[in-house]
Length: 242
Image 1 (cartoon, rainbow, N blue to C red):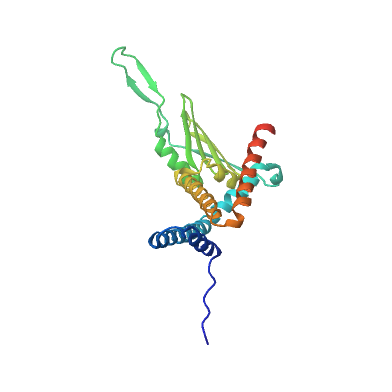
Image 2 (image 1 turned 135 degrees about the vertical axis):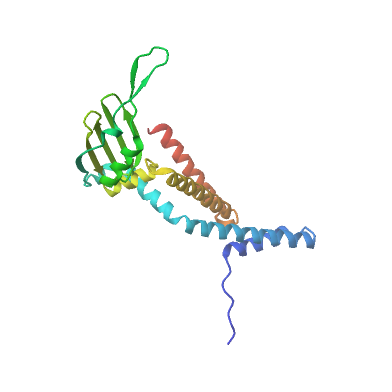
């Protein structure tokens, strides 16, 4: 039995035909070089477009879906917000003010300083707080500690005189977590880098798809017309329908 050859890519075939026609007036060496370069360039761009699309598929799907959830929050009012309150006691050695003597005036002054590291670690270990430390405010009578994460927040208010604190932990639903991840809100530096990488991937996928369009002679003009019309629609909507 004879073994049949695998089907060739239509893009590569069109590049071969176009290169052959364009090289009729050139020397044999020039025709060979142009033809080889065009074929290899088309194959490389096609390979890059396919595998970038597959590699970035999860990111494109995620940011597409969360674009809908962000644009239509009223569709997902069914999600419930869960709040839990805790009370506890902190060591007064972490909260007592530090007393210093000013060299020039000779009077005693109280500096509103506390052991922030010990307080934060205690709250984390005691209540399983997930979010990153967002704020730590200190005044003469109270400390306010805030933790935040995607779809999550925890706020603690501490009495510096007694060491008593109240902690409110609030968890939102899955859609709120996804929306915060889409916006990069309280999601950390690593997720921020992932957003940047996803944006670069989407840009490369779009550009390689546009370049591939120029190798499809029959679809080149209609494809360019559609892309220009799409760009015009975006601009018109922004300018006249805000």
